[in-house]
Length: 235
View (spheres, rainbow, N blue to C red):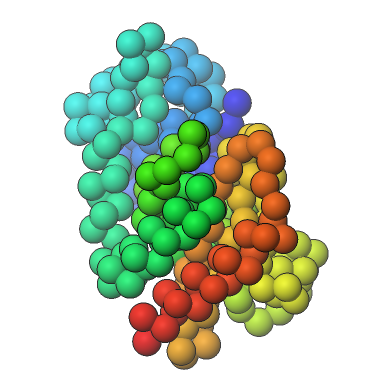
């Protein structure tokens, strides 16, 4: 199971902020990072919080549609997260949407755009293909460290070389696209390309996510082309 420390910063302990709000946000991040819905007991174990505290936080988050309770009483990401994510970087979303739609249909895979926020990569826009038998369901608002997962690696590859960077970043900078397997969600593959804007800055990446077989060598060039188109429309 994903641990809360792996997906969110250290907790507030010095009185500089609201401890309750901090716990709620960390719990929300934990649930959203899990590949499967979690019970309150599982959330309590993974977060290290008392079960009664987790129950109150989960109920509050679900009331605001940030978490969603399934028929088995387990919790996953709620639809309210997509509403919040839809208000993030509207200019990027407007520029990326038509190209992301084309990419999703071209590959038959779920396509998405991430934005760098501090040391994290945040999923801003997700589009699923309208054709094909099956595809991965993925929600906006997901967050992970830039150093893990193809989208984060792609953003780093779009920037100047940094001391101590992962070999995968160096490789992605050379070929133009990054890959990862199971680094954000166990069992899932991702391929991503950096969106380098006219000012030379790389703040975003475009990616596809899939389960099972895929051909990164075929997907990579398609992602590079999509990234260039998005960058041109952002200029």
